[in-house]
Each structure stands twice: as C-alpha cells, then as structure tokens.
Length: 200
Image: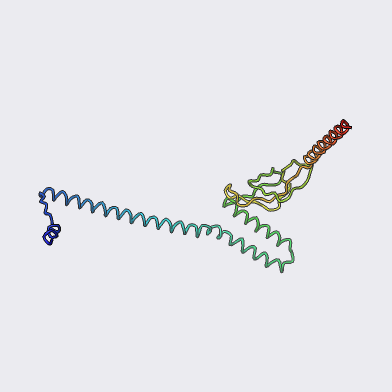
C-alpha cells in the first residue's frame, strides 16, 4: 500500500533541451512583462477615475461660486437701501436706488443666460405659461394672455419656472354653445309634442 502511495507521489522528470528551456524562460519573462504592464494600466485607470470623480464633485460644489460673488454687491446695495429707508427724508430717491439695484440684479441673471418669459399680448403656451385665472371677454380671442401674475424664467432656453398668467375666455363661444344646446332641446320638445298629437 505504501509503495503505491509513494509511486503516486513520485515526481516525473521530463528532460528538455537547452533551446526548449530557453524558449520557456523567454515566454515566462514576456508573461511577467505583460502582467506588469496590465497592472500599471489598471492602476493608472483607477487614479484617473478617482481624479475625475473628485473634479466632478468639486465642480458641482463650487459651480455657483462665480454668480454668488457677483451677487454680493447687489446684496450690499439692498442692505444700504433698507437702512436708508428708515432715516431718509426723500423716500422717492431711495426707491429709485432700489430700482437701480433691481436692474443690476436682472442684468447679472441675463449675463448668465436667464431670460424672462414673454407674456402680455402673447398666445397662451402650456410649455411656458401657467394659467391661474380666466377672464371672460369678447374683446380678445380665446387663450390670449391678458396679464402676468408671476414672472417666469428660462435658462438658455430651458424652462426654470413657468409664468403665471391671466388668460382670455371668449364668452361668445360659450354663448354659441349654450344656444346650440337650447335649439336641440327645443327641437326634441317639438318632436315629442308632434308624437303626442299623432297618438291622440
């Protein structure tokens, strides 16, 4: 039994020539070289990925840094205007100053691609407008915007918030619809009376 186990454990010696040994050694060296290159490429990829993720995170974190810095002078002017409002004798001059600050604020927004959505006199567009009130009228076509309740804005053409508006509700159409319903009702009543008379 022991002899069989020893036979199984016995190493088999294979004789190879010097040229074959040299070839195998060369291939092993090439294998190690390729493997090391792969390790270097993989490590470089991981470093690049981590660096890009950090840059992306930092960009999101500080993306508004420039516009916030532009708003500081506007905030300062608003604060000074509010302080002056308590003590100023010429309230109208203070209001003019506040209007200038407001104009400056809108200028900063426009420089960053923010634009007001046009409303007055325009046709209602559900992509940019939100109807919060309908005014019955015969002077304007149905769906025309008559007034703005809250200003809407776009950023480089993309909707930030819709403009809340008052739209025209053409009462002539409603009157016509009511008249048509009335005519149909009267016609049915007349037909019913004719049938009743025929039965009698």
